[in-house]
Length: 110
Image 1 (cartoon, rainbow, N blue to C red):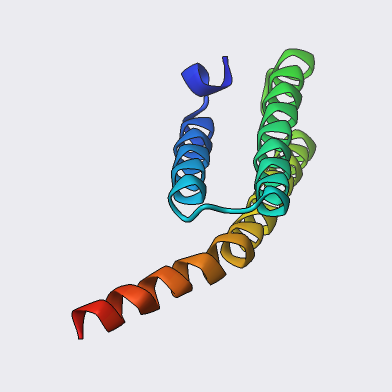
Image 2: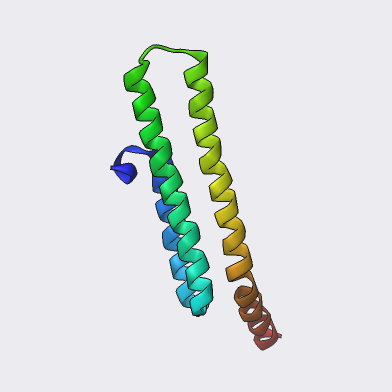
């Protein structure tokens, strides 16, 4: 349901696929895969909780209310925080093998 109904979930799916492909291409070790998997799972969990919370808010209080808006914004902010943390995990996990590969490629070309 998430990927079908939530545009941000589609972006998270694309990011998860890209990270998986990069991890495979860069031959990430087992510890790196654990970090990447945990980060991906955390983002999906946060997105699922945010979606559930927003749907529940819409049922409980269908008309506009500033407190409901603020609560939804806080839940969306949590997804953003988890996503930024996951991006940092990706950079720290995929960065070193990427730079090692890139520097070898540049030496081979030069």
